[in-house]
Length: 297
Image (spheres, helix red, strand yellow):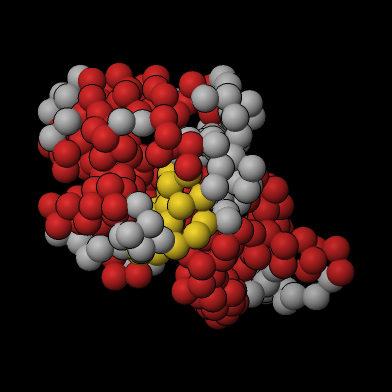
């Protein structure tokens, strides 16, 4: 499989999942609204509520992630080699130079954040700077810059809005169910049917939404791998880097479940999920599969 084929496949698969997610969220909203006796105005209200609660995180989540990760912004004089690599890759990828941060942690890892290429940052740990050679570090940084160029942070924020929308719907539905309220339609038989379906959806939809969210996250990792390999024209650099990062047993001390999906490799070492079912809840694709694809390019 060529790099171009891999990029094309990952793009359409990501958007296919995204489209199905929107259909799923709309269906859940319609059924629950009918079940509690409200129509489309209720759906619009909840959608806007979910949107405005996530707008703040859209604009400020990057600063929060950098702060909680203990990342320190550097200038060119602080680490000339790292700065030059990011600078050269940015020029080659046609994106503005992002801010560069270093996390004082021996666990090798890296992540990118920011709502768009003009408001982006890349962060690497001291561990990754010590363990990787130049071509491997270029592969990692190319991967992270690809996340920036592909607007992955923005896409995942849209997905987060949909997940929040479904969670709010399920919560409001159960509140209405247990505390009464809502309106009754003239056709009680139809509303009773919607009520039964609504209960089932309210239970399973948050779980399904989370699984879809993580599936999109995994697809974006594959896309960033392929895009990063295209940028450096050396897939082996990233493949070798992934081997070294994943083989290090030390977890990243400042990483949490909320930020784990941002990193190039799951930073919660020793807590990786195994198996088909457990893999549905993983933030990252299997490392062996990523390496295999990179080395087949």
